[in-house]
Length: 88
Length: 358
Image (cartoon, rainbow over all chains, first blue to last red; front, side, top):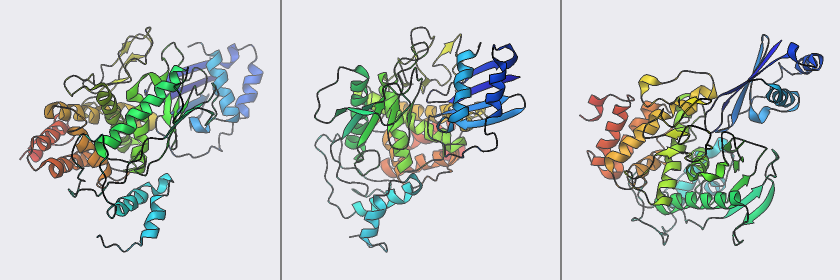
């Protein structure tokens, strides 16, 4: 499974992308558990805030787009872990 | 004496509403209320009392109170507001970021107060709050609807966000837009929202530095990149698409003309990309008019933003027409300012030249 996090927006409007191949990780099972715990169907609808980041998260065929303000709980944990482990 | 069907107490109540949903109504109520107030020019005024888009003196005037700033420190957590580290009357801090935020808020308040006679961000003397040291290695600055928030940067790509006066002016202008035209943050109105913030961010910096339109850099966020990045700034209003060209970040992707308009779902429809088009129109108008950009083109853009002609869904073409109308009202039909504004929008491909200069 491949996990891709793309961050757009911010005052500079720069795009950053981080990718993790779960099967190459030392702890693939914990990654799968984290992905399973993501509330894909239950995402808050928030009004845009100027210059905030927007995150596009893709795990295999599932995608979600979340404003920075909604990045909480397992979403936040996933993004932080992907950024930490990403190879580029 | 103005006759109105809405009783003054209701206007006062409405004028004090801070919920962004009612920003338009609140601004209108404040404008109505201010008709009855005696106009008081503030001492540092650089020009005669303002006229509004409708050309009547004092319609938007509300007594402008001195700036009231408070700077908070988030202690590198993503928690707001943080703890108070500097308030009015305090000595400067030992922390450079605190003092830079302080000065930037002051310069921004001064442009709006002294040039446009606007009583702070909301037109009703809103105190200006800012939080510094937000998050760890946080590469961003934003306006959250109530306050300015600055990250320290990661020191790989970005230095601390307070280092740029144009960025501070940019963020606070998002607040002004929220309380006035309330342009939707998506697609063309979103790009206009971004552009208005770049325009007044640039003007805050130019006025603070005493630079006229010919002397100004027209850069947004100059000096925020670290030495490792090949680039001068985040955006260029003079030449959108040329602010940086870096091995890692790539090349500044902003268009300067409608022919380069970017269709994308990212960043609410590329609001930070397509803002290059109205940004360049402002630059062209300001340099054609000459002198201090905050007085000519800046006044026209301010009149447009606050004059009531814009709607949340206003697109580039409607905004262009609104600025040309505002220039005509403020400086006269066929005045150099009016012609320069219409010509600028034609040059970036937003409106047709034949219909604007006939």
